[in-house]
Image 1 (cartoon, helix red, strand yellow):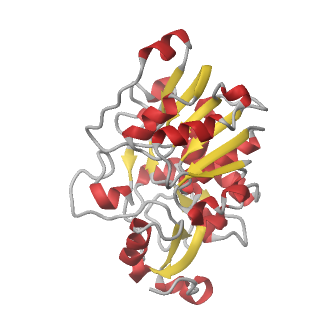
Image 2 (tube, rainbow, N blue to C red):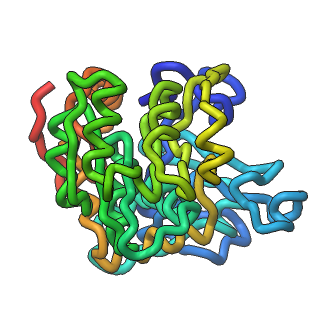
Amino acid sequence: MKTYLRGHPLLFHKIPSGFGHEVAGFAAAIGPGVIQCSEGDAIVIANSAPCQLCFYCLRGNFSLCEDLLLLNGAYAEYLLVPERIVRKNLYHLAPGSSFIAAALTEPLACALHGIDACEIARGYTVVILGSGPLGLLLSAIAKLKGAHTVITGRNTDRLALASRFGADVAIEVGQFSLEEQREAILDETEARRGADIVIEAVGMPETWELAASLVRPGGLVNFFGGCPSGSRVSLETRPIHYGELTFKGVFHHTPAYFAQAIELIQGHHIDIEALITARLPLTSTIDALELLVHKQGVKYALIPPDFQQDLLSSEVPL
């Protein structure tokens, strides 16, 4: 949705362009030399593949690949998948798998990357600012790590899902000032000293600054949400230095996180389809984006014509 509203610094090098990058389906046809799948196979693909040859790849930082191949165009009946993604980031679905659940592998892989960067220990208090799809997935994975999770948000539909995604505490902050948010969140931490981990999953400079004020001495702040290009934040230096705080930025996913995400989904460890507010025909793509712009629903599954008889329902009238 953010890309729809304001563009993206990495996803699109020119416009107009194909749109959408969370996808699963059948292999309708394969090119010469493809051995990773056959026609008719049920598969899920990642929206990227690292080169594995550049400075960063050779150091294991695959999400920082200098030649990261990104794929868009999932909002269509057919998607041509580049050879590198077929070779490095294509996965078969088990019989009976849900294509809708599998299409959510990409955001779950991003959330796994984000949580892994936090180095959560069992019993830690983790505060997640933002109850969007990724905020909810971050909460679910933090709970799998044994954390006590606190999530905040402005959308009651999304906060209503918080407990299903592992949140121990959900705080509705729609009418709160930033200072009121801070006080309410600190009340949920031991001795009000702050959280062990704070994850910003909104992508706004003011919530980046709020996140930095919510962590205990020795804790970690994960700037997971990407802010608009050109954004700046102002952080007080004293608690960073004397409190020995750690700040991290986390971007995208890697093939290893994507593989882990599909295992979690197919093993039913996370009820990921609970994120889906409704299933809509592919022709309603713009309607779905506009619903999200107006903060209606969480995520929408877009169903191409060949799948509609089996997968389409009309839970949300347009």
